[in-house]
Image 1 (cartoon, helix red, strand yellow):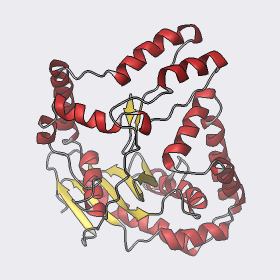
Image 2 (image 1 turned 180 degrees about the vertical axis):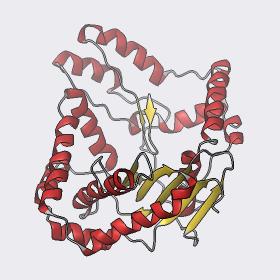
Image 3 (image 1 turned 45 degrees about the horizontal axis):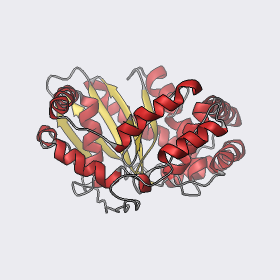
Image 4 (image 1 turned 180 degrees about the horizontal axis):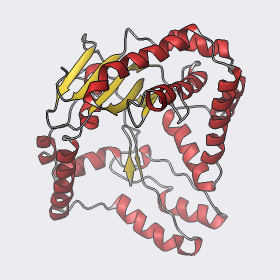
Length: 335
């Protein structure tokens, strides 16, 4: 069982000869769920303990603060969970939520592996008819988001061994025509071990063990984020080096040699990601849940192969913007 900001997933692995009995169990879970109070309290206690551990980590605090500063407290992404929220969860709350969202109108099924006519028939017999309290897909709500005016947000943690630095702003989604080539820029900038940020800030300067940049996706928006942890004394020079690397991408076209290395890395990752039946299933689930077209992967391949140094520079000038980058620092007080 797993979940994302908008979807819940049930993944079942089964030998074909045991699928019939496995489906009986899965059907019972989905159609006749129980929310026993004792087990719920155990799960809540575990979650609360994990939450308390997380709130002592500067990386966790900085990430939450970045979301809050970019989306605002009225947006679901900007609402900060507190311990009291866990205590408000009861069997009745879970049951009402389950009945509203867990039904055939919201459900899609993906099969991969050695899929036979018998397996398709068994799955269809089990889940092919309407089930659950509601039959219509849930309405997708849209929430406005407003960033705070401050450029820098500082969270003091006197006991912190290191400071966490998060920089970011909201940006385009996967559906935007620039996105697939922007992926190449973000990989080159901070998306793999040989990236510009890693080569400069880790390898040359030694400010951190690792730094990354990429685009995360939330409902109706993308979030361009740069993330690292460093000693307190290196916070300011590290941030300046991030800006320096952005300036370089604005001012200088990347070499074909560097672009070829990034291209080969991305093509290798694509091959590894889609080489098994199970990963192919994940790929099509990704297409369905992201609202993308069936040609997304072929367009991804073309974008990686065809993007030019001039296009990389143009994308950097349009999408890597120093002025709108929020700077969130969680750690010891800056001297």
